[in-house]
Length: 275
Length: 275
Image (cartoon, rainbow over all chains, first blue to last red; front, top):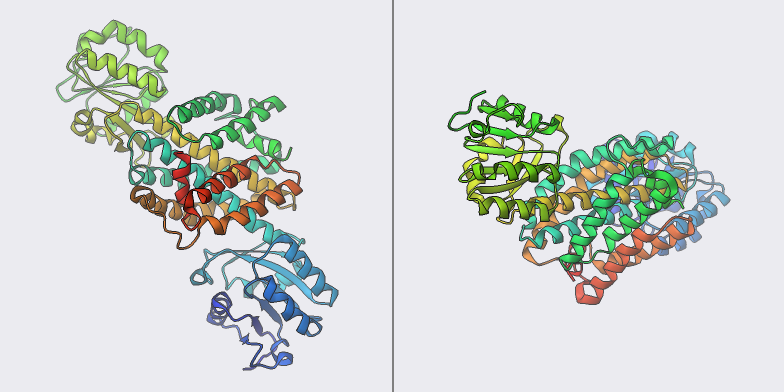
């Protein structure tokens, strides 16, 4: 096992780390997969880029304790899953030792690592990201989110929030149509088609509105939606279903109207969510 | 303006009705667009199929009062937007007069009528749906939801619920990442790609689970999600954002775990939503 200038060491022995090493090797990068028990640390850690992917932060801290002196001066990308606090602690500790630290979130099963459709986000050292962007692209599409090392972990949480909201919305709608005897297999192809086309396009339009801070209610506006929300809640209650989800949507919309967004699009609710 | 056996009369003078007439004519159907003020009712209503699409039910009732005797024995498809109660009343009234009644929901702007990707759902008379399915397919993909005339209107409401839940989830996630300075235009392509692939596929898997009434927690299960939901709420609160949405998701999940679904998938929450 040899390291060369321009080489990458993958630190971690688990299915994810193995998938990372395979994806990098497939792109022609010289890879050392470092198994601490067998190999020489000095040699393994003498790489242009050290990619860390261990089980969790409980496994990471003892590893760092043993080797952080050797990591000084190195470029480190940490793909270990954890919280924002974990990422900030690792960043503080390693940059304190003179390393350059980039945190990454790889929300994919091992079999999707290396697929160009796999999203991997990074935050922390812009220098590390830009120097190694072509190497990181071997793992999936690479997006840099900013200087705060914790942002990549926050992105994980934001993705989960988005998925849960969408999925509970789906379950609520399936329960509602189920009261009329419509099977999930009947309604679902219609729902997923709508999700992939219209809903995804509406979201793309909302992104522009959010960044511009202007929410033109050309096609839909809060005062148009509000009575329909009320009708949804009454129907949901009348059919004996839990109405907590539609009630939250209505309550946030009511706040939006009270804040003067009655003629603005649904995207204006981002202002209410920010309080 | 002539009607022939096998012809279709479109009853309504508005952009949607015009789009319906155009889409049917483009497929080679003989169409009468009936403008009450100009044409002979007896002739216009002597069609194999009468498609009604007026502004709303306030406009529909007076029209029916004048002509419902002539509608006896006819096949009627009503694409007027309204509530389930509206659809049930129209069905009761027209079937009481000896007509066959099919209600439809056409959730599309006029320019998308006739596009094969446009979803149009129908409920009510199965006989009318099956006899005219090829005609109705000219308006978009046609799906029959069952004998209850109100189900098509309920579907509208269920689609709105699904869209609102997804969109408010997106806004919440955009607000969360915004606290770290991530622009909506940076995160949105990642979110919509995930929505169109992973999230849509998860929903397709949930459909099978809902219909089977079995929710295997092979890849994810409620007790795995729950601590992440708690972390999401704490992070959301710490960043000064409204946490009502993640709190509803957590509360429903807590009920699911209490009901014995801790090792089951997120789809098991449909049981909780049904109470």
